[in-house]
Amino acid sequence: MLKATLYTALLSLVFWSCNSSDDTYETINEPLEFSVPSNFPDAVYNLEANPPTTIGFELGKKLFYDGRLSSNGFISCGFCHEQRTAFTHHGHQFSHGIDDLEGVRNTPAIQNAAFMKEFAWDGATNHLDLFPIIPITNEVEMGETVSGVLAKIKSDEEYQNLFASAFEDGEVNNENFLKALAQFMVMMVSADSKYDKYVRQEEGGTFTDEEKEGFTVFTNKCASCHTSDLFSDDAFRNNGLAPNPSLNDIGREEVSGDATDRYKFKVPSLRNVELTAPYMHDGRFGTLEAVLDFYSNSVTDSPTLDPILNQDGELGIALTDNEKTTLLAFLGTLTDETYINDERFAEY
Amino acid sequence: MKNSLLALSAVFALFMTSCSNDDDATSEEALTGSGEISLTYDNGFNGNDLVLGTANAANANGETITINRFNYIISNIRLVNKDGEEFVYAKDDSYFIINQENEEDQVALADVPAGEYTTLKFGVGVDQEKYLQGAEGQGNFLTLAEENNMMWAWQAGYKFLNFEGTFTSATITEATEFKIHMGSHGSSLDNYKEVTLELPENVVVGDGIDSNIHLKIDASKILAGATTNIELTEKSVIMVDAEKSPQIAVNTSEMFVVDHVHNGNGH
Image (tube, rainbow over all chains, first blue to last red; front, top):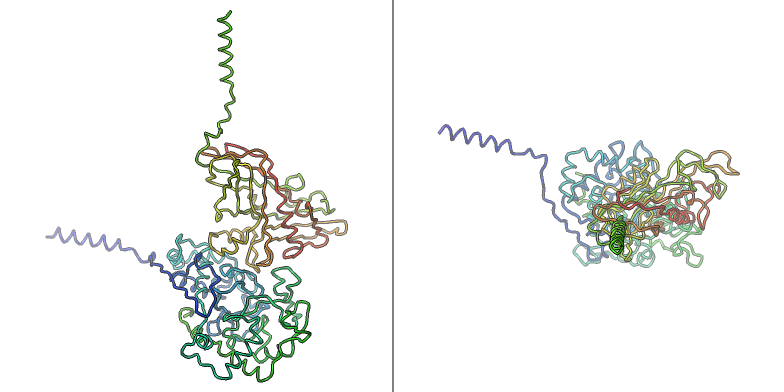
């Protein structure tokens, strides 16, 4: 009897000590469904090469909000890309990175990246996976190196576990690092605005007369560049902004080296535009009214001005006051409350 | 007499057979399995060894160049055998950086199928197909590129060539910096180039047979090329130049020759 008790006691001791402390948990990774809204074109991003998964997505989100991607441990992606303003930097014409250094371009929104062909105002990359390299290594943004970031990440046990669970080879290498961030960004789809409900004839999609009028004006006067339900054709165009001599930003020419690309910038999507002030690549306009006034009154000519904005010597887009009012009403329908409140993308 | 003639013939016959050329242990029937082929990228300048930090004799453009950095990306390696069949080295493993500063001049290709190959093909830089793969299949190539000064930051991508130093010329008498960083320009301009080199002798590989292809690179051809000359006096920092970058890409692709092949016993 004593022997049996002792034996049981010893056995349970063995079992207890063999119970590994949970610092190497193996969580099961599952596929995440990526659905294309019915009013959207096909995704451009190759989902087969990097299929979004539950853990890959969580890892990507953790990285997105991690200040260690910068040299001062403080500037994360989320620092400039704030969800409540469709992932732009609220109230900032230019964002300040490490050491309070400032760039020369306005932080663009992150939305529907899976459907985009070019990234950054000048198309510095045409693959979403490679985009993070740009802000990470930019001296006025995060001021780091990819190797430096990986070294910090590698030494973190929680990251080690996430990488191990999210990727087949479990490695904390640059491939998986970029793929995780891409999985997070790929899932960030904004397609539930009043406009979307209107075109898909869903509940909550009833346009006022003013909004309908504005939609007509938009279709006739804006949609040749801000095309499709993505509201951009991803092309590089010079829209007639007078260059700011103190910034001297040559835009697409920076990437192509081609003088015919000077002052051309990527057409941004207008989704959530009411939230993403200030406007243009250099954030020079504080309001949408100012933007519309610019298009009707202040488009300047130049060798690379987009031909669309120069019809028989008439520069810009003729807009009556009434058309502007209705346009503003229409642009308001592009705000997607679901997107900016979506907990999946939230920092906390 | 007959006997001795017979004996002599026998001995003669013996001689013939024993002296038969036996170093052809690499005869076709013997080649099985696979082996390793190493490529040596032996950097030079105008016929001489490339020595960093040392001035070279003036080039065809009348410019005296001292090189401080000479790195390039080699990729997409293929070998064509004597039957015209092409062996493609696994793409994801086929990106290498040759860096003169750390004297990395070898590319080791493991598990090359046994055979006799007549032609070596490779690319200089990173091809568009690879770019469009994004992070897929990269492993740590991006960080490798970053560590070897081959990563472009502000335009996410690679420098295919990083060629830096100082120069003087008839009109520029003070040593002036030159920096040539050549790569593709986003989706606008693909500067990836392919190189095809006929081997001076077939390279043989198989089980127990590792061989080496020794290339010689003439860095002077980057600036004094077969079709275009790049004068540093005119422009000494060339990074994203719509006109000159493609010219440099062509010149760079023409700086390679295969000098010799070592068959068996590796290098």
